[in-house]
Image 1 (cartoon, rainbow, N blue to C red):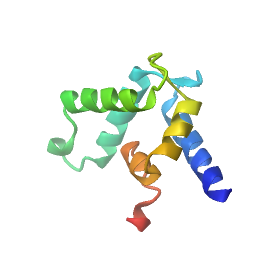
Image 2: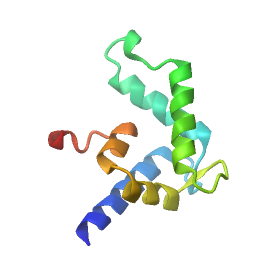
Image 3: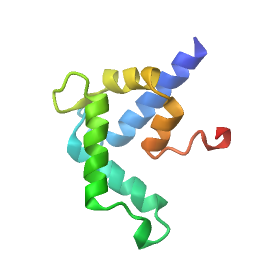
Length: 104
């Protein structure tokens, strides 16, 4: 159905955004870099930036949640599964995508 297609597309988009070396897997390093970029963009001033601890916590939480086979990387299937399982708007926001703002 269309909703599933949209979710898969969104999952793919996010995946490609974070998987900067196009290895087909998201490493902790890539997620860390992505998170830094996102907080950089969202922070209007220095005090809004995430601390190193927050970043680390975020990366750890995301990995605990998404890396379902515990191999230390997140693959496309894992991202796709997450988008079906969790609230995709929340996930998109977590990944720093502003796509669904108008629905909030």
